[in-house]
Image (cartoon, rainbow, N blue to C red; front, side, top):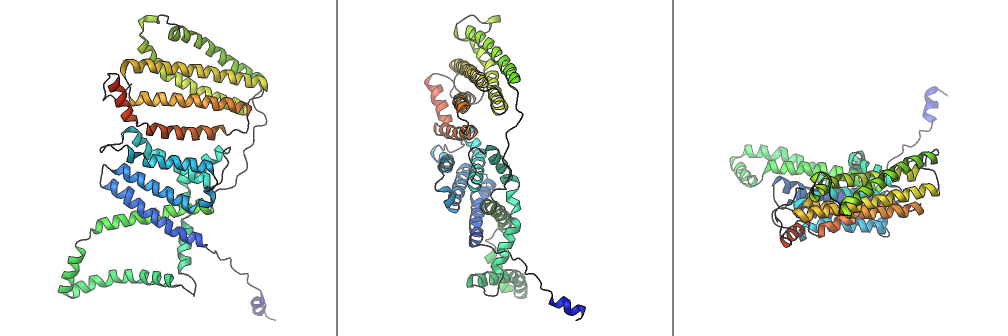
Length: 435
């Protein structure tokens, strides 16, 4: 037997053909709908500089949320946390329709332009990846990939799905129509200009017909739809079919921080805070005269921001020693003391802020500061509970609480509340920003 005959008898392995599912094909329709809505509700109003843009943007994100819930219904239906987040997002999307003043949405409306897509991204990665609330770091990594990787990495699959619609010998009627339209459109682009030049009368009527069309605008919006279609398909495809790269679970540090080191660091910080609170009680609560002829309003203004910053640093210290520290009951006692003193300092910050508001009235910055202090107080209680309940997803609870508290702030109608407060107590109604 010759060499050629031997080669002919060698079996050739079958090539693995990528089979695209019905869901991947239906996703084409969903992505196209989202892309058109993006052009009509986000890009076109922004291009027109309309003052109603916040309403259009809220409507778009609400439509996207509805399509997402429909597409991921099986993963969503029993996930109470996801429904809570989805409800908060819907409330933020609808907020502008309740508190529209005809000219602007104020500072809360500006914040919504960043908060709504950010929370929606977190909702998508949480539901699609089926993360646990304890896996806060995994959700954060997936959130970043959702912005910078997922809108692009699924584009090859987009071309694959579109090609699969046209492949195969037994084509359905829909495929035949798509092929026919795809061949006809470029053919018309060639023939129409030639016919217009071939007959002056035909050219005149064709010019009258197309004069109503703004081709520059049409090309621009078509380009936006095409690019948005690709990005949204890639993102949604990754969410459904490539939701989560499996990574090794995070390991708790085996060495940790020695109990002696923990005791020295936390003990020193606690002693410092006790001395600070003693001085603070003397001047702020006991009514002792302030040094250097300082007024209480100056005292409140200069100390508030620093007090809140110290409280935030304390929560970071707590998180580090809770996760890595050793010491058992002694460590837990030190952490409880740290959180208790943090609460005292937080309360002093709230009193300082109250003194300043009593002197100069309410502004947006003072309102948001009071709102943030109340939130931090709730965070301290969550941190206290986490000391004794290791399975408590403290980071996730703090994030969910922040979202709900933010929605509550919006439905307080911040600008309306500020105007009411200043009018009620005789302050300048129009001072909304400064300290």
